[in-house]
Length: 322
Length: 306
Image (cartoon, rainbow over all chains, first blue to last red; front, side, top):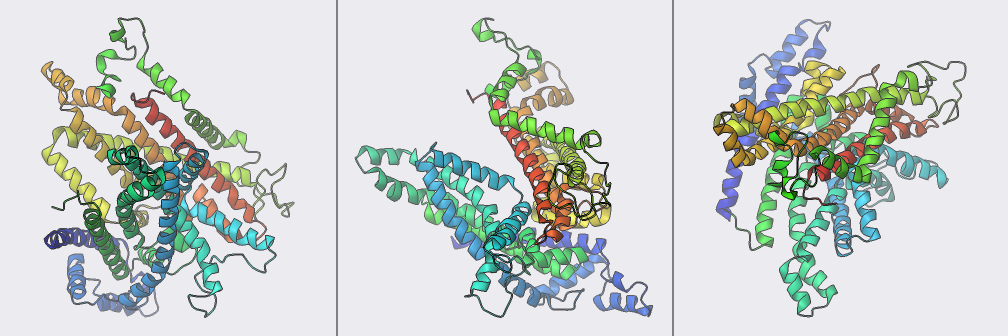
């Protein structure tokens, strides 16, 4: 097992290397971070800025410099603000983590409940309603859903309840100094978490339904029923537990993508997380921030994909890692 | 064998069902059409999609006002009414007209990306799958590389380089979605090319081009068509999302996405209702095309007996 994990991690190194290099090349060759100094009153400013950041060196040389620094734990600084990339990323990461935690938690609970219900009551009215809803959830683009949620659940609901402002806030995560355990925080969190949940829950529900149906029609479930085990007991003790295995791995893989930030959700709700950090950096060509972001999100994708495979082997003894 | 006798060459359009000794003569096309028409949601999808196309591209005749015409005599109009079906924006422009014209770019990009990415993907996938080895290796490495870098990064850099005209947006989006088709087609080709009728064609002296064009591609029409509808959905969603974020189509050009970007400023004001209409049109377009895709999948799949 350990050998497998180490080998997988080694295999993923070239992928990380190539993707960082390609992105660095693309960003550097497209944007000039010194452009803001063109035409400034002191004509040497432009040249001095380029000199300071080593922008005149060939791109591979600059990449090599970044790579040398990063293996020594130096993430570099933002060319736009001069702030250290590490502190920018750790701050943004903490924010994104709050969204991911609640989003994944709610999605998992809802998906399992609905998925199992739809499977054991296949072709019932409830099954059709949930299928229709998940179809809609997949079809409606996240930003459209987010906008409608702001308007209907934020503004209109606030009016209806006769509140001063919106029922749920839609800018940032805090409006005062109160901490995580406050009503203010919850009112900020509801809409972004809802938008995120709708994005993921639809596909997870369908997945859990299919997986549960699959298990329900398997031989050992029929055997258990034939032996006279009550249906309820078969569903929850025999089928349910086994049906979770595929969902767990899908959840690990899907969640990994979230760590890169929820570009749309975060920019819609002005939440300063990873997605917005990346979004702003790529627009201004802030290469070191983009690099740091790609490294963090890339490592999460690699790690969670590995975790998914290992979990699969742990949960299902039939699976062997090779 | 099932999917293979769908459109093999000698059968052409009029396929005689020989197993039943000529008792029933039905063209495959008619069978396909019958299965498709039985899929109610798919038919609904076609109706909605055609209506959207007619209303958008016929906007010059359908829309009650000329594009960008401002009603400067009465800016107080608020909310939908008989003259202004969707109300009017802060500049006094009829919003129904605006939404219809915006649909032109959104739908144009969706269709263009579906067609271009399908053509490119089928060509690349067929070549890689059929000739194997070197071409295959190169294609797979290239698609791997594209899967590593987040697509929004590619898009941001590409828009900076190539500009934001509707053609540029369509081409850039095509560039990010063609790989899925290529991979699909490659997989199909790998299975089909091992089958006997391909050997038969080769023995009969058919050239590689002829085998690809006349034998391989027609046998993959089903999955390719379904995938094209998916590509169209993805393109419409991607275009509207990018335009909403400020990357894609830029004003004064309008698409449903950048209309929504403008309505963001109306949130919390009395004009906020305007955002419902572009949302409605995006959802309608996406649902309609997905329904068509579902219908195609069922109609092309001979296993489905419904």
